[in-house]
Image (cartoon, rainbow, N blue to C red; front, side):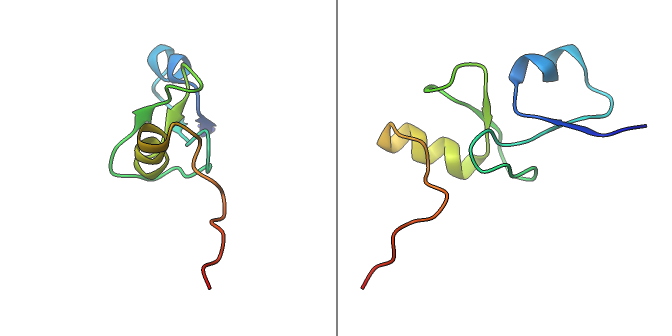
Length: 68
């Protein structure tokens, strides 16, 4: 069977077999916990991106600025 990656929570509810989760923000497909986005309703986030979004009310950046 073909594996499909999705970041949409509604697709996950309708299907199950052959559909895998993917983070809407960083595109990760393995995490300890999946979370729903408040900024983009209906989208799935990995644990890191979900906690960052909940804490800072902005999406987690792909790359953090370097500290000096």
